[in-house]
Length: 546
Image 1: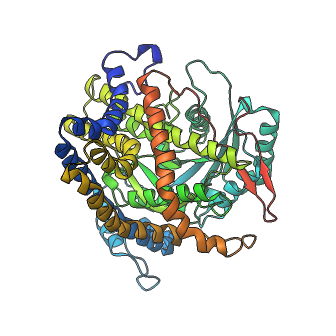
Image 2 (image 1 turned 30 degrees about the horizontal axis):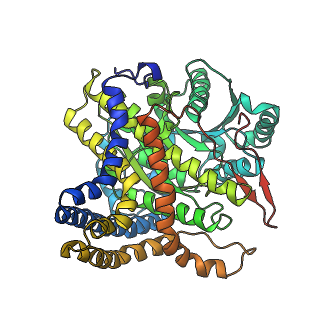
C-alpha cells in the first residue's frame, strides 16, 4: 500500500517542490499573459482574450443549467420518504406499492442489489456522528446535537455521538462538552467526549488530528462491542454543521445500493444558511455563491470530492489510519488519501441532502471580513494537493491507473489556477490590448465585444441569483422586509467584488505561500458569532491558542 502521509517540510524536495510551485507559477503567468502577448503582437493578445472569455461563457451556461437541475434534485430528494425506500432495500423488493410514490431510479437500484460486493441492508447499519470543536460556544454546538436528534431516524438505537474537543481549549471548553454529553447522551445509542491531547509530535494543530484521535477511541469501542466496522458509517461534522432530518436515512439508503460501499465516501450538500440573514451583505453573497457551487457539484459526480461534513465506513477509516494529521485541508485531502489507499478504485457519491452550516460571522464587521478571508485561504490551500497527487501517483508504487491519475491531476490544477485567475481575467484582461496599442482596430473593438459577451453572461448570472434566493431560509422577524428585497441587487453588485477581493486573493495567497515554502501549518479556526432572536451577539474566541 502507498504511504498515505504528506512528506514533512524538510523532505519536500525535487519533483515535490516543483509541483508545489506549479499552481502559483501558472496563475501568475496566466494573469500576465495578455500583457506579454500584447507586447509581442496585439492581435494575438486579442484572440487569446476572446478565446478565454468564450470558453468561460460556455462553461457558465453549463454551470447555470446544472444549477437548475441540482436545485430541482435537492427539492425532490427532500420530499422523499427515505425510510420507506430503505425498507424496500431491506426486503429486496417493493413491499407496498400503493403506500407512496417511488422515483424511477429506486426500481433500478432494487434490480442491482444482487451485484453488490457486500449484502448490507439499511436495518443492519449504525451511524457515528463525530462533531469536531475547539472553542465554539454552546449556542453554536448545542443546535448541531439537537439537529441530529431531530433526524427521521432511530437515533436512540442506531446513532453514536462523539464530540471531539481539544485539550488546548482549556477547562471551560471541556466542561461545556461534558455538560452537553450529560444532557443529551442518553438519547443516543452511545455518547462520548474525546479530548485530543495538545502538542502531539508529528501533528499540526488542526481538525484532522482531532478527529483522527477521536476515530481511534471510537475504534476501541467498536471492537469492544463487536460491531462490524463495515456496518458503521462515520459522519464528521464541524461544530456548526446541522444535518437535515433526512440525512441519516438517505445516507443509509445510498450506502446499501452502491456497488462497493466500502471503497467510497458520501458527500452531503453543504448549505451555508444557518445564520445567512445575520451575516453582512458581502458574506451573504459569498455564502450563497458557495451554496450554488455545491448544488452544481451534485450534477458532476465524476468530479465529486470530500468537503467539510462527509461520511465514510469505519472499516475504510481504520484501514487507512483515519485522516491526515499533517494538513489543514483534511477534508479535500482525504479524497486523495482514500484514492491512493484503494489504488484508484474509489469514488465519492454526492448526496443531495443538505448539511446546514454557518455563513461567516464574527463579532464586528472588520473581524468578519478577516474571518472570511482566513476561511477562503484555508479552502484554497487545497492547491497543496497538486504535489501530493503527482508524488503518490507517479513517484510511489501504486496500482492506480496512470491515465486516471493524470486526468485528476490536470483537473485539480486547472481548478486552482482558475480559482485564482478567472474573475480577474474576465473583468480586466480585455482592457490591456487597447491600452498598449490604442490605434489597433481589433484592440479597440475588444472591450465592446467583451461587454456584449458579458451581457449574454447576465443570463447565467440571473439563473444563479434565482437559485441562490430560493435556497434561502425564511427571513427572521427581527429583520425588515427591505433585506429580502435588496438580496438580488446585493448578489449582482457584490459578486464581482467578492470574486476578486476574496476568491482570487485568497487563492493567490495560498499558491504564493506554496511557491516560497511559507506553509500553513496551523488550522485557523473560523470565529463564530451567534445572534439571538433579540439581536444580541454571542461570540467566543475562535482559537484559544491565538
